[in-house]
Length: 128
Image (cartoon, rainbow, N blue to C red; front, side, top):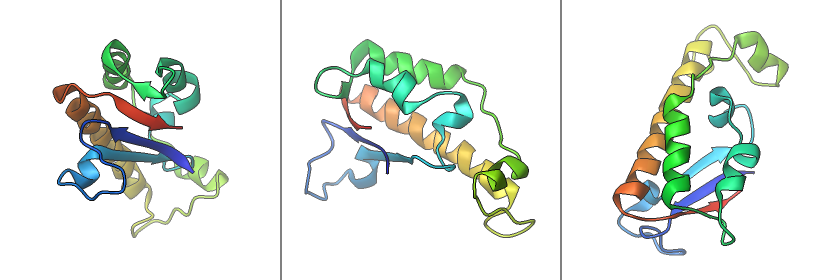
């Protein structure tokens, strides 16, 4: 389970269009979730911004973008991750450094996604 977001103007359901992954963003509801590292929540902070069609648009879209830009991203400790059943090792893909890299990259991907929607004058369809 997770937050599934689609740029409305670029995404065609059931069709692998030329935008592919660029029209879609997913943030899982687990410890890989980027919003919690920004002290934000899909339910508490994003859901109230959606319209009756579950779309994020206009000023609300720009507002969310600015909140993400202004948020201090925290880096969870290895202990915190382990306490939440995440495999953390000293080396390998599960090292704490790799987890921190993941959160930084996921934030960048989310920012790029929001910017793409804004640049295209599109709303974002949200399945939270």
